[in-house]
Length: 262
Image (cartoon, rainbow, N blue to C red; front, side):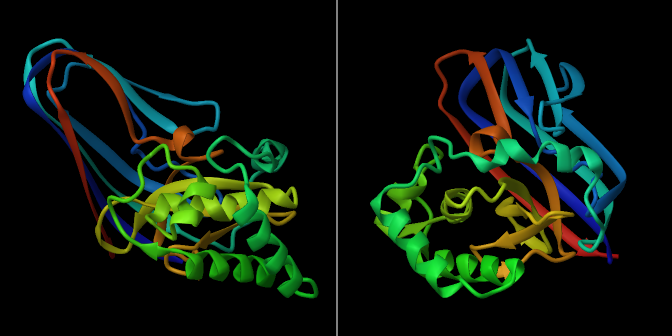
């Protein structure tokens, strides 16, 4: 168990002023089986009209509109979380796990993923569920080299595996695809790690009584240094920022995350 202090900063910069900016944000961590959010406050600039809600997966959302012209849009979230990966999952999470058994357009396997799955299944045939997932996690980790800029938010798991390079989103989509090939419920997770950097993605798989986290980018099982923000079937369910605006500007998004133990 850990008590963690977190700061999440997202910045959207526009090449020229925009207005009538309508947005949906998923950057607020939610209390669940493995974590308790003790404090959480956010600040948005320009503020505009802001409301809070939840999506169909239970993720917290901020949605609003900024009518005034602006060239910079920022979101800051600060709070504390108590994490405990040993806690059993809630009844509702057990009831809803079936939706995570099925492939999506981003995780649908092709020849390369099916070959990787066959190899993993052979090596993990006599192992416990947790150890089998470690085999899958390690196989994904060894199949890709971490490199920014070679994939994007629309890159499917099969294409990333063929390329052999990618970022945490790609590692997670490939692991999801492997799990779902044997109908193991598995979901995409966005969150924060101890230290300083960007937001991160990993996978949770359902093992009867709880969801177990595995981080194929770092080739580790998720521990109490991970803070979860959202989960869904793939990246698209967990997109941190979506919106439209009036104007011809180009936009650039940057994210900075800081997590420290108290």
